[in-house]
View (tube, rainbow, N blue to C red):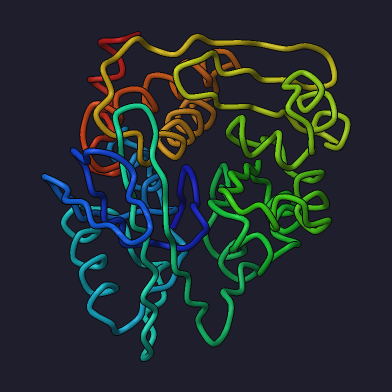
Length: 300
């Protein structure tokens, strides 16, 4: 089957607590007024692309535990192609609890690796696509040669690393970033990886690290900035009233990739990303809030 994009990375069950009085303190209990359960992780990018009208394949794992079954049902209801998702006869409870406030959020995540990692090589040989997106350092570390395999198959490649302080300083991540076409970190992820709080210095270091690619830094309500060997491009964030920022970065990725596979230039790709990232914050739940192409075009 021919796809516009393949998305590779773990699926999480996102449990999002909202309308909280404050962050919890040790020894105390707080009550959230609302709880939303939805698909998270790489599934947000896949659902976002699907809602925009792209042909997308999600390469991921689900187990036989209740959380995995719930995610399978929610993904099936979304209409997403799940033919590349592996189903295991073992529990794979991959869960993220988000304590969400209008402007930011904090996460607690549990990840369970399957017994055997996904082998991307036959998938990329048998399923042509324009683009491969690596939706986490977790999957990237399992398949460090993913960029090479994708380039051999004629695909461009992007990576959104996600947050993990140890992983962001791991030399393996630098090696993978050096090979991708688009590196899509948040500001905090980029600065942690480059070990500096100076954004311009972080962008310069990341650009120098990449052999062929472009760094696209997401910065919440501030401008998104792209940098390559020749120039920088910035795109302003939309002015919206956020209620939950969970999945905003993944929704940005979906908009960016949709525009990319449709042949647009870098600034247009970033504009699509900025619109999708902003609009998803107006609804609780990253995948739930990903916009349709019609909604994006209204903003365009």
